[in-house]
Length: 284
Image (cartoon, rainbow, N blue to C red; front, side, top):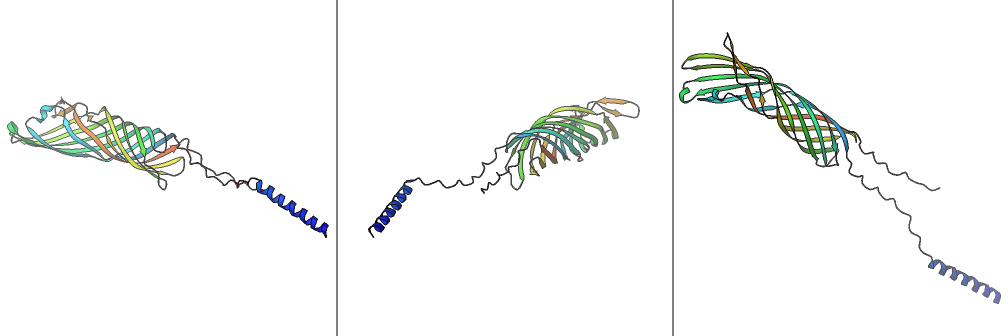
């Protein structure tokens, strides 16, 4: 009986010693949980672009550059251009998700101008009445350096604003000026015409639009631009009286502007790779 008690006492002492040793061991750290990846870095890169659209052009005045033509008369003028197609190509760099810049070269197709002057004599010219009907064609080459601010992306759509500066080559051709008048000398008719001429001007533009991200490489744009291209000039003008031609000063198309609507494509040359989460690891 004594031996049984001794055996039980030795077993209890051994169990208590093991429990004390286990209590002194450090607690193992829980297994690490999956940490989400850091957000992708703001990415920049080169891109190519192309646009097609149409213009809606205006001109402030069509003027005879011989100032004496306006002595003793008041002139009330109306006129407008027809719409014309526009096409451009360009290349640019997107610095980050908010700012990008590009250069573009644009051909602006030939549009037709029709205008009318109603002329009323004043002072020594009192009693004179007349009209001048103008026709002409106009086209441009436009080169701009542009900068844009992208205003954030929602559901793959990014609104943006921008501005550009550069130069425009304005070409005016097919100019005619047919007039009818009545005054102290009776009734008269006149016909002037001018050859084509081109003029380089400072140009600037303001842009706004929406960009749709089809995929990381392809972006579609619907954009509006207000463009100021300076003034255009005809060649020397001539009047024909049925016998001889008389040379006169050219005519000026003063301050040509346009409201453009364009549909564009932007191709990112080095878009960021799509993020792929790490594979799951299982233990057998």
